[in-house]
Length: 384
Image 1: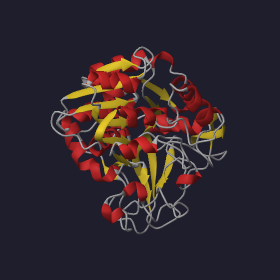
Image 2: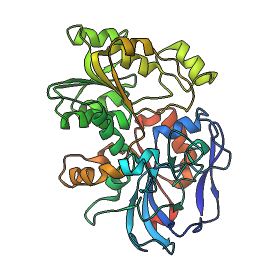
Image 3: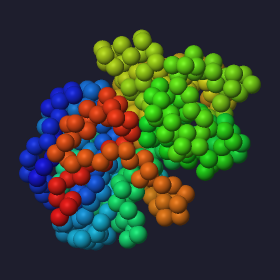
Image 4: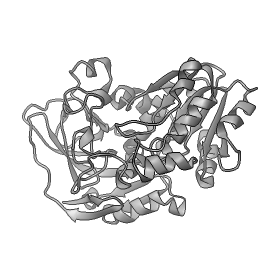
């Protein structure tokens, strides 16, 4: 089968690999019909996530058709078209019973923090991902969710991560009616978080980034104010001025490890890898939220230390919430929102490419060429 393969930082290619096989009675094999390049994949691509091994196949956003199931699989069958949440979760452990599917205690026994994810380094289980023609799906009695017959596959694939993560970012922010919400990062996750903030009752939504094409997209898709941080000076000071010097009620960090905007953070976090990525957006979030406010973190950071102003967070009495998204918990609600037209995921897609051109897709996305916001890859077998 054709699959993306990692060969080192900024070096990937499309290669032939063996089709995955059933390894456990609860496994399923899925023929991939749509798969995406995520901003989180760029952290791997750029070498910012530890233990990303040569030969790995990325891709934690994919939908497909089940072509084989293990002997113990009873909840899905061959021929079903399914959404595959990016979390690999057993559905039965202590944390899964709390619906913390991104923290499953069984799928990634080597970690005391996160569970397992598809295609996301050996720190998160070492499972190959879905940027391939076929993928092995563990715990098939729990994870895969059947795609409604009337749902477009382009909508469905964005329910594997982007829409749930943006939604959970807004949910964790604890938004109250009339709140001012600030989102740092106008990538797909930030744009969705900004749009979903309205669903929780926000009275004002502001998004901050440095790419004008993303900011324009956010204005049109999320109906929010959008500002370029290169034009407003210190973002924390700007937000204070916008809020009668109190600060925003809630701030969402939708950037994570590769934030621009601070030279020291960029050098230590992105170039020298002395910390788990550049924490610039998190600095701005902590410093621009009001006393007693909430900071919600959905941007991805590596599993090591970061230089953040924790004293400011403590002295301001902030609530800081973050986690990998519990996709399975949110899917029923989000499927309903899509079917009712409340959310329109496929409008986020700006580029479609064959899987054979995956290297060009990564280069385009990482260098922000051609106003690229969200790329869907089409495996050759998807047309069969």
